[in-house]
Image 1 (cartoon, rainbow, N blue to C red):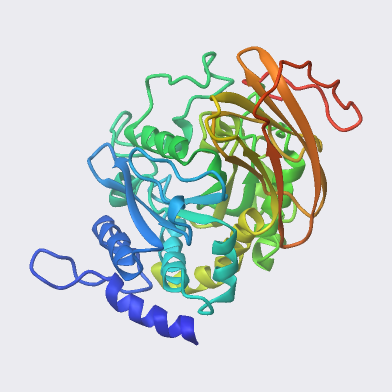
Image 2: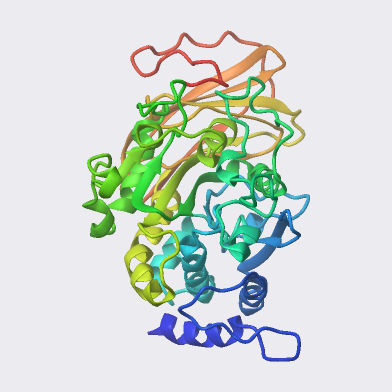
Length: 445
């Protein structure tokens, strides 16, 4: 009841006014324009300025703003132009509108943002949102491709081939097609560069993301690409973990969980899930790029068989996907393992390497720091071990292995303190019973 009351008040604030030069207020169950999107994120910020902040990550090819909204109860969780958020709490990013003519995810994020901003920092309004925001931070990028939305087409506003624009989900450097991966190819569109810079800015706080599409009802997990170019499996080294995370979304809605593919896709899906290259291989996509370069556990959600459903169906789609969208946030933010590396005051910057020793349950993370830093693994319940090494140049100064148990709906904190004085040390022999030798970093594992 409290959330419904606050939400009704918030809705009055969230729509544009009727003064000269402004658009009329949008109906709730319709497609909101790019101008209404910009006004919406600012109204959300005005309604709860301490916990909801708008952030412009750049402009599209045709000059439209690309807006995000960050919702958090932590003052140090909000990015700014030159300041990344703290790495000590995890965050998750929803990305909508990569293809301009697939707007369902973009619109459903408006409804999620209304609920998050109505409850953030207001204890008891919505216990589910309280728990999510106690665990971490939510970033919402409503429309990566605002030009394509305005033009009702898949690609962006850059007319390169018969007015089709550039497909942004084929525009990222690809380790199969580009030998200098992860360096830029020089063909990246402004929207692509904006998202790259934004995810780099979020740093190690960002542990998960998904981009929302239309054209099927299925959770797609990486890798999307393979070397053969034919339909064939090519799972990531963390396939076990990513399947667990994807299943959290799928199993929250029976419509997707019972889908094994329809029409030309009949039999290709496994209870609402498919590994990308085993459906149709593609190269230059978001999820492969950010998984390999940024160690973000990235997925794709195809939300509806129809790319642009009728607006009259929006209530149905919100009812279907709302539980799943929140369940995915809980999977990433409310349960898992956080490794906190503490440095003494006045310490010099050193390279730190954090390695998950449970096979298939998380990527190795490297960073340079002289202060406290966090690394997060959104793992299922179980026993886990990690190894933390700190280095100066090529010298290994020390390492420590730590273990802990993750319980359902709980985040376990493992702390490692780097000593003040230390000498170079040889690393321990690898525990071959717990992990494989590490593969090359920029290759298909």
